Structures are given as structure tokens and as C-alpha cells.
Length: 163
Ligand SMILES: [Zn+2]
Image (cartoon, rainbow, N blue to C red; front, side):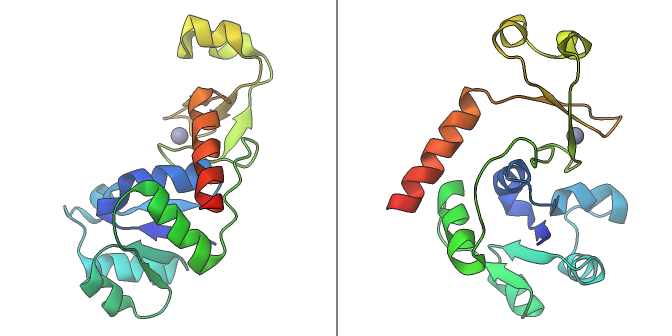
């Protein structure tokens, strides 16, 4: 399941990538289309061409898409994730091996020798963790690890499931 996430939902885009879903964020297409914001019509074409489900909070846009789109209500990223979980039966289980880069949506690769990323993370992080993953996109190369923020996300997802 691949997504195209509308401009108002940047945080949700990052979360979906972290959970391993191939997610394009509408604002990432600004350069591609030379238009800011990217018009609904272009987003619609893009979603259809690349077989992506549109996620939006814009009812008019949703109605233009009719099928292969999901309309989110309310506020807050955990609320949105819960709606996705219910409506699309999404498995929201974090596994760093399957995660995608939150910044650019590229896959991650395990760092075989942590000395290679020594200068890309804080000293404390470097010392406290042994398992690192890195974005494969040569212009991004962001480093990821199972830090406290991930533990926090998992806890909130767990709570969301119980409520
Ligand atoms: Zn990246």
C-alpha cells in the first residue's frame, strides 16, 4: 500500500514512512510541478499514475478523488493513525529494518561499522547505541536508531490500540 499525503499532513507523512509505508508528501512535489501548492488536479494525476492512495483532510479534494482516497477527520497524528488503522487495516508496528527515511522516503540500510556514521550523530548517541541504519539516498543519508523517540511512538501506538 503506497500513499500520497496532502499538504496539511506533513507529520503523518513522516510517521507513515517510519512505519515502513512508501509515502509521498504533496509538498515534496512542489519542485517537480513548479507549483506551490501543488494543484489538486496534479496530485490526482500523480496518485493515479503511481497507484497511490490519497490521504487528505480536504473534503473537496477527497470528493474529486472518489475512490482510492481517504478523508481524515479531527486533529492529531495519533488520531489520524488510528483512522488509517481502522479504515485500511494498517499494521502499525515499528520495525527499523522495514522503516523508510522520514525525510525523503528512501529505504534504510543497516550501518555495518558504526564508525562510518560517527560524525553524523551526537557523541552520546554514538556511545549508547550499536545498531544504526542510514538512508540510502546519497543526498540525504540521514541516520536512524532505536532511540527514546521510537520507544515513545510505540507506547502511544499501543495506548491508541487499547482505547
Ligand atoms: Zn533520506
